Length: 194
Image 1 (cartoon, rainbow, N blue to C red):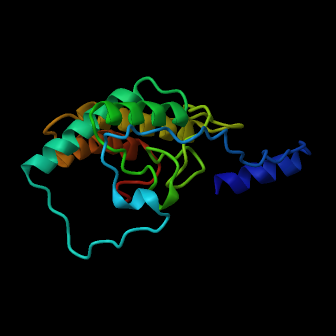
Image 2 (image 1 turned 60 degrees about the horizontal axis):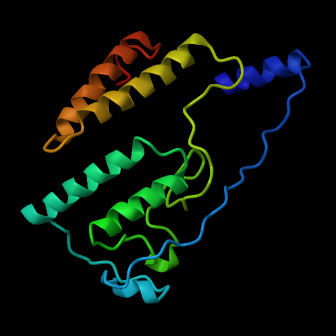
């Protein structure tokens, strides 16, 4: 693998290798308040999680419209945030301004209005003061891997650009697939790895 080859090259060249610093979370700010006139779900007063419904959930037109509105709010927040804490504050305020309760807040004792994950945190991250960063490459990275990162970022941006009210997942996937196809034709996997 590329990592093994790079490690062998470092050992042969006697280059001193330092271990990366351990991950450290940022400062978690206090829980944001919710006005008294906004109804709170029953789980807020306990750390007990509600039972999960066993049946599938299907949204009617009203539910789909509410999801669209929530996604539009989320898109506005992500354009200006620098930390996950700023995302949480903006999402919290938008939800409160709309007269609604931020669902994650208090669910099973969760202290924030949105779950965010950055880099090494896999899921249900708690917003904090860590700065959001663009992808960057470490060490001597060959041209193939540089191209892979570049095309991956392009695919993400093209997929985001297609997202809008009424856009189908199929359309988003087709836009991303076009870029991936260009990558696979160029990437040294051959025509069978797709």
